[in-house]
Length: 385
Image (cartoon, rainbow, N blue to C red; front, side, top):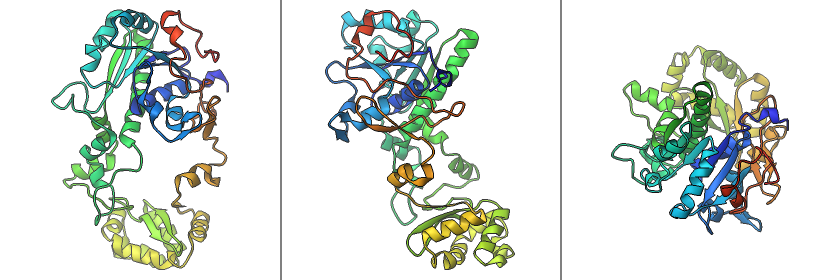
């Protein structure tokens, strides 16, 4: 890959984060060319090294989140290592940490501590509830944040219990916002010479990623569970086919006219119950009956072909393997293989000048780059490290 597509080449990151949110953020930075050094507990390392699933070459979970990084073992409570660590951080542009608020200060690694030796540092702190406030020191995991943010209460069907989203979406979203915050701060540093402390509270992030629920709340209602349908638009749901479910997503009057004609029911357009998107949403049950009268007599494959031909947004409901390995993504070049472990992982989701940025480095062995703690800066992107 052309190195010009790696937008963060030359940026050096000291990564104190563990498990998911922070490592997801720093994987994004490593893909973009940043030198990321994982600072890990001696003899144990990041907890994700010990999380399954496993192959004979280790944790596939760890590989996915720590591709393209280097590993340095440091006992953060050892005073003898502290000065070496600070000297190393002086060579860095970014620090990422996800300690519980207050812990970094006890270790002498707070933003204030680091700023004293590296005034222009970009310092990112990921936590459950932010660095201040009465909730700051509460422990938080993804499921806790999904529950506290209201997301869980709106996920699932109305006749069932609140349901966790099928991925650690609070952690992943916090990682994405952390990478965005770091990149924004690096631009600010380039233009002003000033560093910044980026505070990434998972709860705030999870609330911010619910614009539809925010709009419903602003209009005076409380968002609720509505299953697979869109809470304010219709038809926008899964519908019964003869052999499964098909997704139909129609969010404007023109498309609804196309759908009605495709169903062989052009009169739906002039039906007063379905005249606008809002009315279609209010009368969703009646509209569903009209749609499923047609869809239930066709297979999912037949319906997708019919709707594709008509220009109606649709899809089958795929499992993850079908989504990643099937024909829909066959030409997307979405996956990469770690050179050391042979593990397959998803590459960077963005394309830069038509190419996916990626580091040449495999996921590191624990302590593989310990010598870097007492050595000068290496050449960015040196694959021999």
